Structure formats: C-alpha cells, structure tokens
Amino acid sequence: MTMKKTGFLFDQRYLLHDTGPYHPEVPERLQAIYQGIEDGGLIPKLRMIGAARADLKWVETVHSVDYIRRFEEVCFSGQRTMDSPDNRMCTETFETALLAVGGVLKTIDLVMQNEIDNAFCAVRPPGHHAEVSEAMGFCYFNNIAIAARYLQQQWNIPKIGIIDFDVHHGNGTQHIFEKDPSVFYYSIHQHPSFAYPGTGREFEKGSVDGYGFTKNTPVLPGQGDEDYRHYVNRDLIPAFDHFKPDMILVSTGFDGHRDDDMSDVKLSTRAFSWIMETIFQMAEDHSKGKLISILEGGYSLKRLPELARNHVQILLNEQVHP
Amino acid sequence: MFVSRSMTIKVVTIQPDATVLEAQELMAKHQIRHLPVIDGKDRLIGVVTDRDVRSVLPYDCYKNPDCAKEHEKVAGLKIKDIMVVEPLTISPSDTIQDALLLIQEKRVGAFPVVDDKGKLKGIISVRDLLRAFTNVLGIGEPGTLLCILVEEKIGQMKKIVDAITEEGISFGSILVARYWEEDKRAVFPYLLTQNISRVKKKLQKMGYTLLEPMDWYLDQLPKHE
Image (cartoon, rainbow over all chains, first blue to last red; front, top):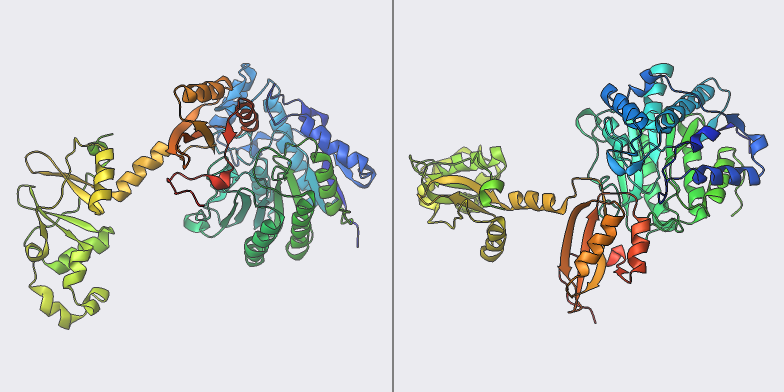
C-alpha cells in the first residue's frame, strides 16, 4: 500500500468557541480527537495545518452579507445565543468560525497544489446545519458548502461530491445546493421523524436543475453496521459512480456511534472505519485520491479518540486494526 | 380552527349544463377530484366527482379523451344528469375537527363549504386537513421528537413541561396519544432543539419512561399477545 500524504487541520484557537455549561458541542471534543491521533503515533506522519482567517468574499459565496454582519454584531454585542437557544456562543465565536472556514480553504490549496493528497479538518464550530441566512444546530458558517464553492471558483473544479455521514441531516448544505447540478449532496442520517432537524426524507431529491443531485438515506432508530453497509452500497456508491465527482468532500460526524447519546443509531467503531475506507476508495476511483474530510458532530468524548485515530489512519492508507 | 380558515377559496366549479367531457378535462387540468356544481347565482346545486365521471364514460374513452367514436355517445351527457344532488356540505363556521370527523364518518374526500344562504364559499378536502395537521405537528421547524410514557393522572403534563422549560427548550408541539395500557398515556413533545441528551437524562431521572423510537405510534393499536 502506498502511503498517502495526509493533512491534519488543527488549531488551539478552535477551542476558543465556548458554548457554556450543559452543551454537547464543547472544545473537549477537539482535544479528544487530537489526543487519539497523537496517542496513535500519527502526528509525525501528518502534514500539520494551522488555522487561517477566511476572506469574507468566500464566506459570501454561500451566506448573505446581512447574515454575516448580523452574526458579527450578535457575537460582539455579548449575546450568548443566535437564532435558537441551541446556538450558544461567546465573543470569540465569530472569529473562530472565520478561522474554521479559512483553515479549510487553506487545506484545499494544499490539496490542489499537490502538497498533500487528502486531509482531516478538525474544526469548530461545525457547519452543515447553517443555512444561507440562519444559524442552526450549533452551526454558523457552512464550512463544507463554502469549501465546495471555493473549489469551483478558485480552482475551477467543475463537479463536487459531498458525502455527509453525520447522524443528523445536513439541511444547510442540502438547501444551498438543491438547485445546483454541479454539486451532488449525499447524506445518510437518522430518520427525520426521530431526529433533528426533521429534514432529509427520501423524497427530497433536489429541485429544478438540481433534481436528482441530492440523495438522502434515512436510517431508523436502532439500525447499525449492517444497515449502513447495505444503504451505502445501494445508494451512495451507484450515485457517485454515475455523477463522477472531480473532488470529494466529507461531512464527518461521529455521532452515529452506539455510545453517542445524541442519536439512536447504533454504529460500532469498526463501521466508521468501513464507511471511511469506502469513501477513500471512491476518491481513488473518481478524484485521483483527492479527498477532504471536515468535522461536523460527534459528542462521545470516550469514543472520539479511537474514531479520529482510525479516520486519519485510513486517510494515510494504513491498515486499521479493529 | 374554523373551516373558513383552512378551506380552499378559489374553487374550480362547473355549470349544470356543461358536458361530462368538460368536467373530465377540468379535473385533469387542475388535478382535483371534486367539482361543485353551481347555478348562475353561486348557489351550490350538486357535486360531481371523478368517480361519477369515470362510471359514465366508457373505459377506452376515459383512458383516451381523443377517441372520437366514444365521444359521440357521451357528448350529449350533461353534468345535471350525473351529479349528486343535495350533496353533503359543511359550513364555514364549522371547525376542522368537525370536518375531520365528518370526512371519516361519511367516507368522502371533500366537502363543499356553503353559507346559510346556500352559496358556495369554498371546498375543504382531506388535503387541506392534512396541511392543517402538518402545521399542528410543528414539523415544518427543525426539532426533535421524544415519547414519554406517563401514568394518567392530574399534573403529569405540568411536570414534564416544567422540566423541559427549565432547560431553556421551546416546544414546537406537544401531542398526547392513548397507549394500549389503559392507565397510561404517550406524550410526544416536539422540541425545537438538537440538544436533547441532557433533557432525556433528566426526564429519566425524574422517573419517566422514554419509549424506544421504534415502539412509538400515534394510532391506538391493540396489544399483541
């Protein structure tokens, strides 16, 4: 097996977004992820990438100027939530969100300049619930959506395939691209009748020119490894074989793990490896191995270290030991 | 909660002297199944459904509106010959609960809405009622549904609502359904949050049973022995 050059985006400043007490989306998540990767002896093998502040013009490819301004004002005025009590914030939140976007864009540059083959972006705050003009589900800027637009506009990559295996549906990402046939959005998540945010039903397939370029696989509570294997083989692989993405972006969420109490889906640690190995192979088939994984959810501090370690090992094309 | 607020106001209607083929065309064009028949003064005098039309048109003609030979046979057939006279109607001041129960009891798909002077004001169909209840469920907004099993006694709901409110969580809706055990109720709060693990633990600590999602049902089912 040839080793891959893998980037790891991580920055202490991503810990500064403070959600206060009793909130699951905590800085300790990133510390657990880093710890797992370090304890696995992987740090020396990785190209470390630090945060960078995003140019607002790239954020504006997805979000309205009004929304960006409002987010900045709400944040600096000292308010502690925005748009919903779910979205707890501190005065650092706006800057941290810009650093998350900027870090992802910097990672894209490294991939496109062939400095690295693929990367894992351990960023906070997450992004896939964020809508054009609304913060939602702990998300403010839609990191992966901005990444897709940046790839298209800065690097002239025509077709982007987004795979979202966070246990919650990425409503923001879906809505941003639902009319756009140049971005395929695939999501597998807990069925919306049983989980936040209540979208991502099977019949949501995109609209107008983008009809057929959105695909959702709802998973029932209690389903797990074998079901995911079946659905990914049935839905994701044929869809991407047909779409033939030039670049693959992944919304990585570890919250479908059976020990994560944010969902009723029962995936094992091994199943997450299988999913990522499958995506790795899809990148080999379609995008010359180019692949960028961006962190969304995953709240089990006990399981995050092993999940992140395996995730990065797969990107490095190393064998994962069960 | 009144029919007048949920009904469709722009009603596609037909005159009694129109032909059956015209009715067929109108229903196909607007993708509807019920045509109120009105006189020159907007008074309701009958209803024609797609089933009435289908039963008088030869099968070939129904499938293929262009078939000339069959057309001749039915061309003379008028709406007034096939319509249901004195159809079941509902008043704009009736409630959507009335409409729901009546639709279930009479096994029809829609009621013309008629005021006390006999004038057609609208039509309320199963589709309109579903829209109203989609709104009642609150599922247009992002949130998470829970199912809590409670004993049927006074004050249970207050405790649940208080416990959830203390967490700073708002409600999209709250439904209570009968449970197969006689002295139990299933309470379904739809919470406008993603942050549910803490409130779930809290409710369990208070002694409530959270039903496993795969065991939820809104319909009252018999207990399987």
